[in-house]
Each structure stands twice: as C-alpha cells, then as structure tokens.
Length: 215
Picture 1 (cartoon, rainbow, N blue to C red):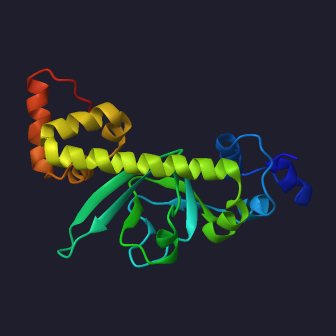
Picture 2: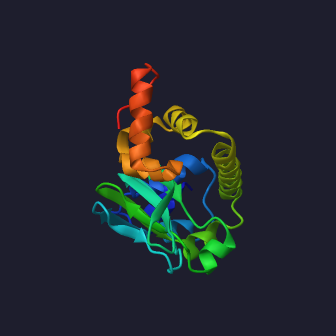
C-alpha cells in the first residue's frame, strides 16, 4: 500500500498534503513503515512573514521543516549582538535535526524568513520514531550528512585560501539563486565581509566585465 493510500484509508476525504507528496517523491516507492503516515498527518502548514523567526536560539529543534515557498536564513548572534549568516534555504529545501545533539539540546542559532514564506512543520520525535529503521530515510540522512561535511570543508577552504572576491564569485557559480533572492547585506555576512566591501567587489567585477548576477 502506498503512503498516501494508507493515509486515505484512515481519512477517506483527506488529500495527501504537499509535504506528504514531497516525501513520497524523495523516498521512492517503498511502503512507509507503521506510524509514518500518521506522523505526517500531524504536520502543520505555517505561513511566515518577512523577518519572522521559525527557530530561536535557546529553544530545542523539534520539527522537520519543508519549505513550500519562500526563503529562510540560518544565523548566529555573537556576544556583541551582531548576526552572522551560516546558510540560506529556498523553496523545496528540507531541514531537520540531523544529529541527536541537535534534537536533544537547545540550539545556538536562529532561523527566520527572508521573505513571506510557507513552511511545513512535521513533529520530529514522531517522524524519527517511525522511520528510524526505514532504509530510504537512512540513505537520505547519510546523503545529507555527507553534503554537510563537504560544505563545511569547502567553506573552511574558502575562508582560509580564497579572497573575498573569489568567495563571492564561487557563490555566484554554485548558488546563483541566492544572488537573486537574498539581500546583499546577508550575502556579505555569509561571505564574512561588510556590505560596503561587497558593493566594492560587485562594482569592480562589473567594471572588468566579469560575470555578475544582479542582487
């Protein structure tokens, strides 16, 4: 029995949610384990205003999130109250507490909407309990962990061995959608420079006819 069929058997008039459909797409055709469809039925569709927090530092990370539309940023706030962007997420992205520590202890970062967004919040404890022995989910988690490690190593390389201009050019190459959607001040923070310095870099690249995405 397919996942959506299992849900409809309990709720005949209920269509599978956008979240359920997306999970079906990425997890393949294997039947879901007991409890997974019921966990999905607990998910909430949350509209977010621009600047509204989805996750606050000091709170526990208790949900898997899927971005139906919009854009989010993950950032830290230092002891001087300055924010430092760690990552950006656009529609279609999944986020969840991929390590036990992230789910068990209060987090040190914030997640907020960069623009009006819609996010699905799936209770993590219920979903994790249902899929912990589900091979397609285990494969997805392994893939995500590998990607996070590769991104971390690449980011360390860029900060240690690449100039600010090269870091910006790398961002344009690997994340062109960010340049279109994320405000320049947040791009600058992600690159570890001021927005004034980024404006100078963009102007210099434009003057030398280097490829430059509008932002």
